[in-house]
Length: 298
Image 1 (tube, rainbow, N blue to C red):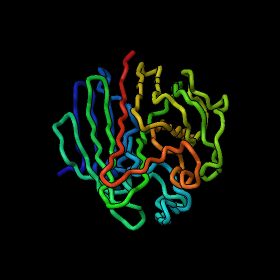
Image 2 (tube, rainbow, N blue to C red):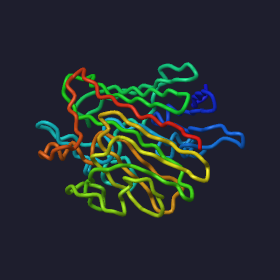
Image 3 (spheres, rainbow, N blue to C red):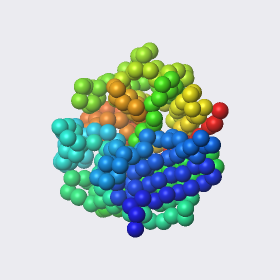
Image 4 (cartoon, helix red, strand yellow):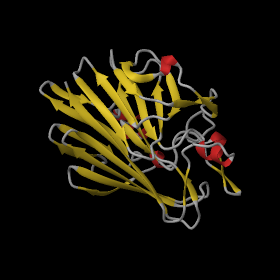
């Protein structure tokens, strides 16, 4: 059986790679002149290596971004997460994008993936489900995590989509504030969004370099590719109260990530820092949210 699962609806197609961290391999629009990638497609090497980090999009479970030095403080215990990114001391993006998911169901237009985890590095066992559904005008992704163990656990979820960066690409992401980060990506306070990083109005992405977590956004974003005559409007549901914008220098992609928690949120919450997005799930409780990408043709 192929490792890839393909969904089709009208002129849209979605290719999934469950064993590569529940990732999207490609999301494409068929046009009279050929197929257009709406997300950066997985490379052949990434598919061969089951590497979600070089995919089109992958889920973040049970937290987004970093846990400082892998030391998770929760309740009266400290848990130790193994570093999972080369030359980086802070574990990134949880467990799920580094492991294989199972295909639970598909009908050619929708698909549901599932992932379960239990280990000594986390306060409780959990199960996550990821549902993809092609719509007439786009894609809806639903993500959930359920505490399946006997103890409470901190939880966070998110999506990490990669969008193609072309000349004149424009974005609009209304932001209320930002977390001030050390060079290694760990927050040390909060502040206002500086003018050069303010995308409250639609403008060209240009050469801005970012890898920051923002708060207070209205859970919408717009990406336009003027030369393609295409745009994508992202909408997200609660609990996605934070957005990470990642625009690495010299690359042909960028990310606008709807996430529920700030970088190192669980440790900040343990220190009494407010509004980190940390959610504590009692046994049997579920944290869930959805992201929709609506495609506009101009």
